[in-house]
Image (cartoon, rainbow, N blue to C red; front, top):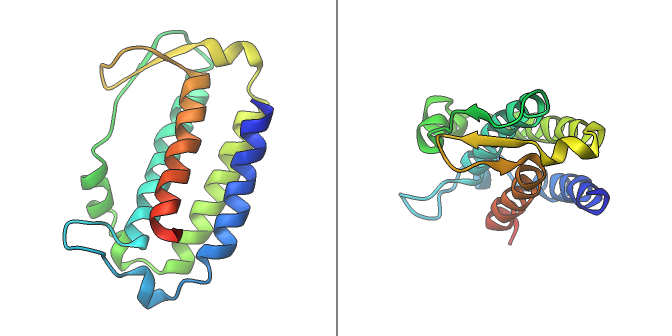
Length: 146
């Protein structure tokens, strides 16, 4: 977990440095009508942070906890990320992820084995959720940064 946390922190730092170099205009460009703009991708990553924050904290209190999934497309639209200032989105994204890195670092090793069910799915461990969150974050950042 230590290596994953270091990778997570480095991803936040390196990506933020590169993301702030994208202009406001370029951040709103959709590669296709059915694809998200960089603003919407960062908004989705904020939503992912919000949902996983609940999982990472609540999952430490109970084993086999059941939590809802979320409708990512609708969340992005309802929150108006496309109309939000790029700098505001980036600051929120960076701070939220730094907080999640801190929460994860404080998680006792034995809690990583606790299980969570999301949206009625099969149980997964908190350790799996943390790693999956970091990989999901990195995948979406590659969509923006290449």
